[in-house]
Image 1: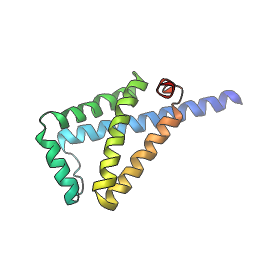
Image 2: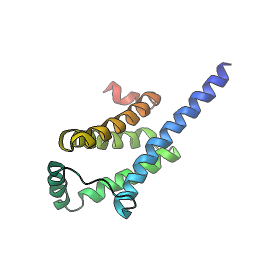
Image 3: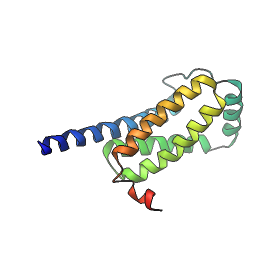
Length: 133
């Protein structure tokens, strides 16, 4: 009985890790190939994005982190490192979406934070070093 519960929890942790990594792998690749168009951002958000676009290399670096770390989480390579890198992006993205992009941005921020929370709670053992600093 306990063994079955551990198998279910392990499968759930794997599913959450693949979903979180897959989300960011897709977003990174979508930023490169533009498969799916995002709704037009509100004016304050667009102005913010335009300023970031002026910093040559910043957005490609963000997309690179999303792709590499998303893939790393999917395959289970250096999970805590990739989760930490994506956590930095998550809090930046959600803050910007929440504060500059109106109701649509708030809904997106809540979805991303929910997925991040599932990942964090299901992988506490891997991120325990973050908590000890």
